[in-house]
Amino acid sequence: LINPNSEHGQGDLFLKLFLKILKINDYKETDNWIITAETGRIDILIKRQNPHTVIVIENKSNFAIDQENQLYRYWHQEIYLPNLKQFGSKTVEKTTNNKNYRVIYLTPADWKIPSHHTQLKPKGYNTDLPNTMPIVPEIWVFNNQIVEWLSHSINQLNKENHRLREYIKQYIELWN
Image 1: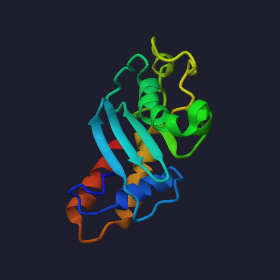
Image 2: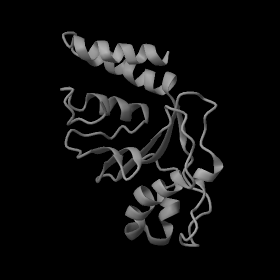
Image 3: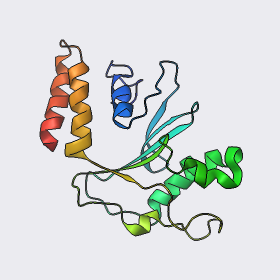
Image 4: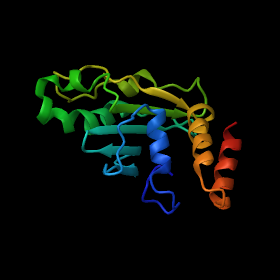
């Protein structure tokens, strides 16, 4: 649903509402957002070049265990390395607590949180890097943030779009 180029026919409706929940309010129609799923082991990756924005979503809907250094590797690959040329030794500082760089841990229950070991620096990484991923993962629970997002979305859909409205309604019911 997040991908504006998907076959749902709603363009950027879902993406705009998703970004609004994240409080990324500088969305422009001319932004070139790239949304990928299951690429490079990242469940969902949302990116744009200007202003540089990266949202990594790790989906644990099936209560899967965390892989060793998983979130750290995703942070390093998608946030740290792309900014290294611009910020150099200040990359960690410039990308930490920056609303344009997010790691979302999507979970079916609020007790399922990221393990400590998934946020640790892998062996062999540069010793100058922090030992723990410097971005605190945001915990999103399906029956909270996803239901909120879909509830806002369904209200924006054309009343005649019965099929998509019904699909979203059923998904909301699943998680409530």
